[in-house]
Image (cartoon, rainbow, N blue to C red):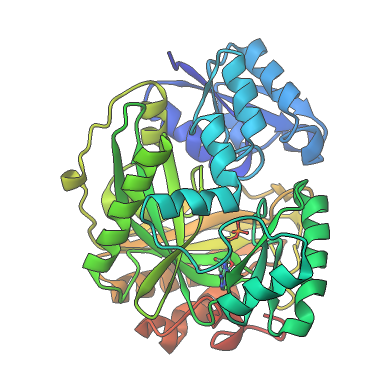
Length: 450
Ligand code: ADP
């Protein structure tokens, strides 16, 4: 039974989940840190409990405090949102062990897909194409390491098996840099991700980032819900996303989508998930799976008409998939701009009090945000203050609409990355589909330090 959902998160995503709970007639319980007592997600929830001081380690990442909050509030399910504990297998296991429903895949699946080496192997077994590279952890033997890199061909990318959030990666251009880079990445990985395992991949020079959305129930049924293009990135962090991925043959995408569905069945996936790919020279290469809801899920919701958060809650409460693959149809184009409180030139976070908040509105605009005038953007958490999402029948119209929304939105008290979004939307290469993951900083620049 799922009747009372505790949301182990904050900000816009906590609010998004509360809204889905309410639409399904479920009780929504919030948790908050001492810094978030007056936050919108707390006031919108049916019940709320403070779980610790401002630093995330002591609140939103405090597993025992969250489980205690669930017990005290009578919650029977926990939605982790994204970030924080959303891909933490130990937490999912603790939730399950206490007889609560974890809204996401099983702890075993999270663990498996959280290790990028194991995940890649599972994809190869399911016939999903992967970036060429090692099929296991990189050994210590320097000669073997050199041999592997030579076979893949320079430049190569050294990656942490447990890496995430665009961190734990290092490009190596030539053999003389290889061992030093491997040792550094290994040391950083051990420190940041508690696992020194690393692997090597071919470094793709001009790929786009294209990802497939999947939805699975508890009974082995799985579908894919189109794709998103997330090539607009800065330091491997997504900035603007769109659905569908423009200028790629539909049958090629459908082939990858169907492979992703096979992989879901193979690994026993449950809930929503995303298969991330690099797309270069007409080919798709798997890089990793995210076993949770993505920040950019709204663009998929707009083009498919499927509410992904409601879908998560419905499969978590044991419903069989109510859609088959042939029911899924994408229509129109959606674009999302992540609105960050950061300096538009230096891109450092810009915490502070928002003295005026006027998000865009009008036809085809959706704003997912927790911000109200007077709110404080805390230095303790992510600097994202909301997402502007535009929907229109064609890409050209969606770009124009998004540009209108970016210009209409006004935020005072903190700096934002609105100028960067304006530059992306105005860029001819972006408009014509002539871009890759390096576009921001090469083709598209704002200020001096993109
Ligand atoms: P994370 O878990 O940190 O998000 P990913 O493996 O998804 O790590 O990679 C993040 C980003 O890094 C990708 O979106 C892409 O921009 C870049 N990237 C990853 N693998 C490669 C590669 N083999 N070649 C070039 N760029 C890559």
